[in-house]
Length: 336
Image 1 (cartoon, rainbow, N blue to C red):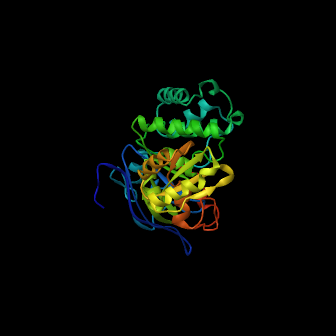
Image 2 (cartoon, rainbow, N blue to C red; image 1 turned 60 degrees about the horizontal axis):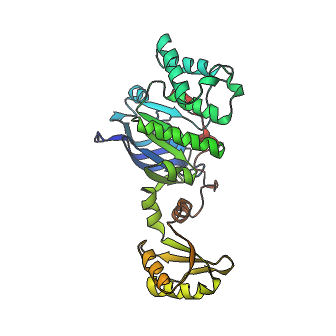
Image 3 (cartoon, rainbow, N blue to C red; image 1 turned 90 degrees about the vertical axis):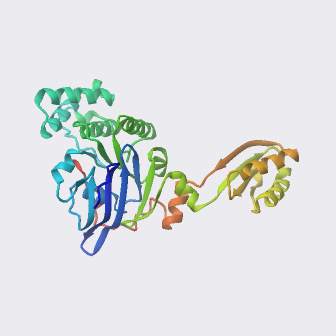
């Protein structure tokens, strides 16, 4: 495999078998330095299995992979020094305080006593956990545990972070805080490979997204590229007078060549657009006809619609699990 200096992760033809099942089935992946790369798919799609292969925690049955030019198969120790991993479940010790957990992880990773203590204090402050530093983990909320788990993966300042469904089980407010933390990591120079089954999370965070289903990559691109690939934008109009619905539908048909979808009880008209700039033509024509409009929005297809179009099911459909029970839910604390 030819090394590309601008890539943090490069994988070709990754395959992982469990018996006669292929949990990962020929996936290619390229993650550029300094980006958030999202891997989107339902439970059982092979996301965690792929991360474990890249993190040297599972043997690669077929294919090649490298992190910053280091071969995952032949240079596992060098790969681990470049990597921080946060799994689906907080892997902190319930019987220790936050400070003690970070100190222990730091010592296990080779930091000296003083450096371990200093680095732990820095991370507790960075993740807004200083006031809880001496509290036992059993007293932490789910969001605090996830922040501490992420802090532990950053003790050695790795240039690459693997986040495996980092906001699973968190409430909306805490999810938002985690999103801000991930954005901050990238601003400080980290590269992030993020797996998620939450479409809004991929939409909010990822510079580029790979859609994985049944162990295979079925699409890749920016959120906008994926949305544009599966459907048209829609001009949504809220009319002041329901009596204008028929007029608006006729104008839409004349200008864009498509039938509008009418919702009379809500005075709403949805006009499918082949091009987003057609919205201007429709609005100008309606102004000329003195149609009063209360609200206007132009919406692209959602990632939900993208995923459904690409796979035939949504991200909560788990009937397609590709690995034996539990394989894609394993904790990844041993990467530390």
